[in-house]
Length: 357
Image (tube, rainbow, N blue to C red; front, side):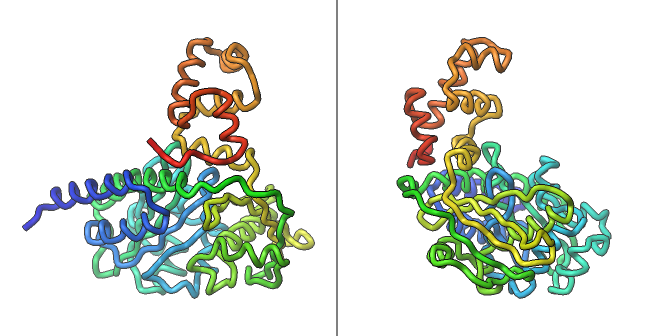
């Protein structure tokens, strides 16, 4: 009989190989599923990609769950004051958490458990966020049948280790299929009703909707990214905040930015979602995270794009010119370029290198 430790070593070895491959997000998720399913002991999983800069979910992939109640899941995630949510897990730095641990073993303390997980026939839930290079590239929720009992500490620890490799695999995948910079185009507009179902779309939007299609499109008639940006806007308006944009990648690798505005400024009204190709400023945080730049390297990189000299950067960051030069060498190596000019040109075309080394 194979020991638990041997199983975990094999899981980590398989995920390390996965992190070294060049796979799309869907390929990463489908290959990770059989590696993790028995080791973590889950019965259903819902995978998500996210906007790397904000961590907002922008797609859904699941072969286990019916998405009939996904509208409720979106509302619970954005409006519900619950425990062990994806943003909370990310801020904690743990990488993964279980509902049983977060609720002290009393699952019914969780609104999500009472209104969604238990009615679907599941018990404990394990959630993981897939961070790498300062960006959040995806996340997942793993559910198990009630008769399995709560997730054990060893399973949670394995999930935390696995999350790091999955983050690297998804980060690496962002550098695949890098298209040429898109031709200028006017924004496209989609109108969603109060329930986030499609009401209308202009001609450009109709052509673009297929770029973002995922498993939730059959329920809402629009992809997850549109539902999330609209619901985020509702939550922001209700809380007196500015709604955040949402970055999402098309099938050919082009990045777009979605902005939602509420008709009449009412949280319970229709919303207009504007789709536009991501500008260099929009995509810069994603590219920096793709390269795996450290926070200090990002500060230097931004100033390089601004055209500032080494001495100016050193003064602004309260360091020496030699230290800035060391940061620049590291930045250029990670970006696969040899000079400031190449680096700036690469960023301004929002066109990352095709090979990650």
